Amino acid sequence: MVIGEDGPDPEPLATHGNQPRWRDEGERTQVTDFDDLVEDGPRLGALTGDAGSSREDDFFSPVRSDGDGDGDLDYDDDLEEFSPSGDFDDLDSPRGGPRRRAAEPAGPGHDDGGAATGGGDRNLVTAVAVGVGLVVLGLACFRLGALPTALLVTAVVTFAAFEYFTSVRVAGHNPATLLGIVAVAGLVFATYTSALSAYPIVIGLTVISGLLWYLWVAPGEHSVPNLGLTMLGVLWIGCLGSFATLFLGLGKQMEQVDSSITSNPGIGVLIAAVIVAVSHDVGAYFVGRYFGSTPLSAASPNKTQEGMIGGVLCALVVTFVAVGLVGIAPIGDDLPQVVVFALLCSLAAPLGDLSESFVKRDLKVKDMGSVLPGHGGVLDRFDALLFVLPTAYFVTVLFDIWSISGS
Image 1 (cartoon, rainbow, N blue to C red):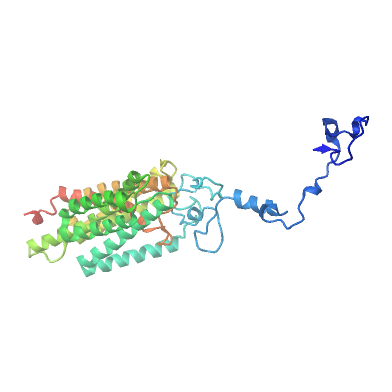
Image 2 (cartoon, rainbow, N blue to C red; image 1 turned 90 degrees about the horizontal axis):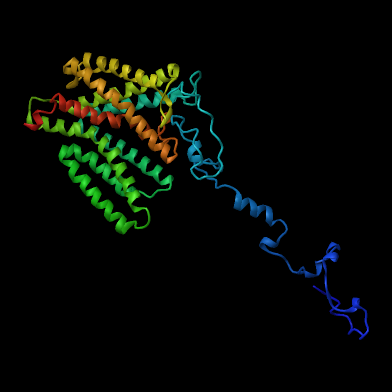
């Protein structure tokens, strides 16, 4: 600033101090008062005295959400509040921000069931109660016949697909959710009404509809990856899950061809497949929980090789007794056939489980859902069965179970 500008005109012989001059470096040590620059009017927004702290909190605080609907804002609720049956406590936040670290896994000595030496996080009583309820519901539909069973399967597989598409959206992708759910439901029920001929029709229409979806309905960036995620859900959950209703459709055709068949044989094959999957899961859980020490896969660190072996052995014994000795037709009509069926299907079960685990790990979700207390989501409960069902079909083809329907 200029000093002495407002003073009187200097005399010709005035001293240098009376001349206008610039403040030099030496004078900068003096206290400078800028009060005359401050306006007397009210200050708004960032000019208020306390704006700095609140502004800083708003801008730098990580995004928080109330994913569990409990009214509390928590970091990454969609990861923290899921059922403990998942394997992803060690995951970083999918949003890149800080997050509360979940409890460390108890190591490889347990198989998705909590600590190896305690009760763990899973409520075993609740899990068993829900499991028994599912078994009762399934048996009731089996008892009522093929159509109620097909409707139940369609509802279960469609809801599992809904969980998948929801998780994909939470991860930041944009699948064609409506198209995917309709395609899954249509494919599952169409295999009951039309058996094998449903696959080329429904899958072909889904591919065409998916291309048109991202051409007109949801155009934009990343359309090809999003279409791929949509088709993954349809083929993985819908196509593999539809083998359950395929059994029923083939059995219905057999009933129409051979009047001596009084009950749908597809129900028997479906029951045998469910027995293998459930007994494998139970055996793997308890053996891995108490005896597991060797990790099975990086996709699911809590699963162990001991748990997998225990699950296979448990499935062999339970299936041999429940299907072979009890005589659940058509698989139980021949004991060597029961052994082959149980062995191959029980080996497929952990592959289905691990496949879902690596999908969840890539999406950075702990469970696909939470609708089943003690189990997670529907897809979390039936992930192994998705691989058991097609394996069961190819085994039945190997043993010519469906020969009458093709005659």
